[in-house]
Amino acid sequence: MESLALPPPRRHIARMNPENIVYRTAVWIIPLVIAIVFHEVAHGWMAKWLGDPTAQERRRLSFNPIRHVDPIGTVILPLGLAIAGAPVFGWAKPVPVIAQRLRNPRWGMVAVALAGPGMNLALATLTAIAIGAALALSGGTPPTGMAAFVFQNLVNFLQVNVFLAIFNLLPMPPFDGGHVVEGLLPRPLAAQWAKIGQFGFLLLLFVLVVLPMIVPSADVVGRIVGPPAQAVLNVFIALAGAIA
Image (cartoon, rainbow, N blue to C red):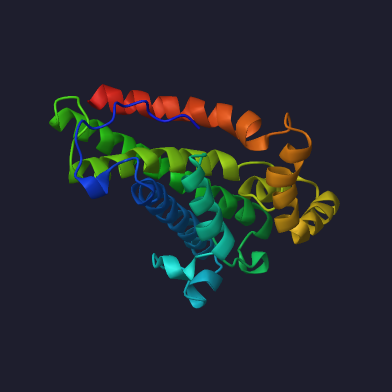
């Protein structure tokens, strides 16, 4: 996904050099972990509100990243993408939700699924406002020095939240969009659809990694997620610009 196209700060102390691999990794991993944690906690909050306290009982309604970290999705994959300079994305351990404990299992699961992307879009809105305010306070130019690190984290936090929201709305298991489809399907078809979710990780690996290697034109991230994510991102960029 494209960046906000803001000019780089004119000066940095050595360890804050944006070309430094540690800097480049930090300004992506920090926003990603925060966005993922809020995403998962939002699922748990919605489930609790609708009658299922499973996430709370298992201590997953916590903003402690350690409780949500998936070694591959939260650490290895994002780290590799950040180092490679590719669009950074990832996932965390799913918050446990037991549909049968929800007051309305079918529509409750739809609401729980949409809570995660909804949280990411809410965070993106707040971040766009913060970016606009920061630019307004600095006279329309990005800050320098240590403040530039914080500002870059805000910029990347905006991008990550928009990307996660759109990415998770893909209508296939194990994404949130897949749960929405399951809730909308007639019950017999929904039961069959749910079985696909048992192979969610393998399906995810095939669609995102293997398929693009075999058929380069079948780039789900670049061709399906990228355009709508960029369109939504442009709205938030405009909001930040209006405030600035």
